[in-house]
Image (cartoon, rainbow, N blue to C red; front, side):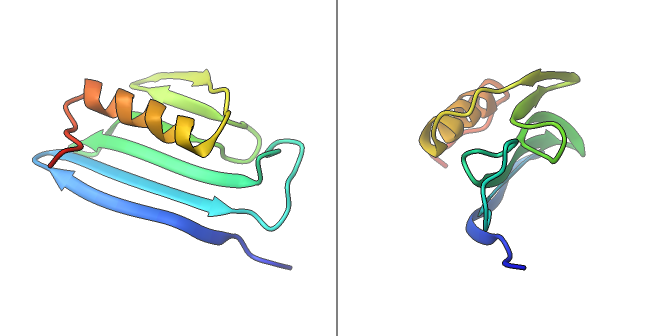
Amino acid sequence: MPKATLLFSFKAKQGRLVIEMVLWQLPTRSEERRHGLKYRLYLGRDGSSLVRYDNEAGKGDHRHLGSREEAYEFNTVEKLLEDFRTDAERHGWRWDK
């Protein structure tokens, strides 16, 4: 069975903030992942999740903002990253560092 291909991986710290971004191309598309991607975008502080976008099996595309979880409408990878970047900035992450 073919494996997923890692497209992007990034991890960094700024003070107490930690960011991790991982994106894979899946070998096949599915009803749940029509875009053919698996991703996990995470921003946390001191081990607690502040923002997380992911599409784990059985849940589809969604995001976590603190303790709140909501559906996320995936359009493009660029839009996904833009939305995550905006949410991360609201929690103090600085992309220009």
